[in-house]
Image (cartoon, rainbow, N blue to C red; front, side, top):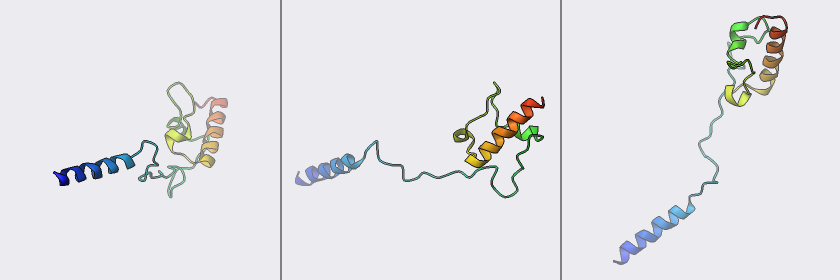
Length: 89
């Protein structure tokens, strides 16, 4: 009887340690698809590449969805806007 009670106390103490607000230990950062070696150059003439980063409605997708770095995101947005102005998209 005594042993069962001790086991319950141990399991409760482990359960109490768990928290919703604890940081995730297993987070991993995805690499930017435009910064890796052999990646295509971001240019307003490369329509095939630019269309991958534009939604169906024509909006530029945010970097948190596409995993693009800040620098490349700025280049993407400028080149998408240029392509729109020239009527390529």
